[in-house]
Length: 256
Ligand code: PGA
Image (cartoon, rainbow, N blue to C red; front, top):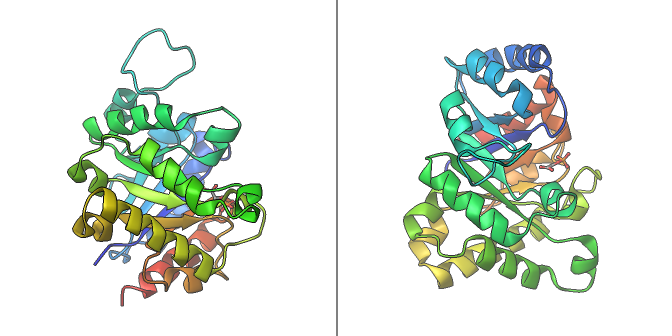
């Protein structure tokens, strides 16, 4: 049985430490009894220290939204896995479509970051997904196939299992347009097929695959009920404790 994982990707929001702490103070008591779902919150870098501090005795883990693959050096503006690790951060989101599209991150770069994160024992959440034009042109599977091959290049089976994949169709991110549970399940199954060919069925079945893209309390349940959807990566709806808690409850309900 794969444990569902709900990630809150706050993007460039709530980066003021007091703002992060206020939200987490509301969330911590409500999720206290949730132990069948992994909960990860990823605030901006500026609030990571405060987030780690306030969640220390809770069941919420803290994640970063990005990192660089070198540990230290002349890389102006970058943050290394070592700094994150020392701060008490446990997860890192890699290859989000906003990083790929706006900041021109390639599969090759994400692959380097992924290997570094794993070597530092940070849990990676790796995002993949197609643009609307690619879906309309019938190229979704080709895009996903290439992203998996390039992003996970030369990864051992043991490392792959520690990775969480977030399937986030780009046309569904922040648009209010959610992929249907059927569309999502189809791609999640396809991802497992690719991994089965690349590794084996045990590995393909063990890895957790989240969905991301306009998840809300109103659509979470139908998505998480699908056999191959192991929770979600939530943007907009993760900024408020109430709506995020509703989504966490929906994931928790699928484990009962
Ligand atoms: P959204 O973002 O829930 O606001 O669509 C999801 C994401 O980008 O991870």
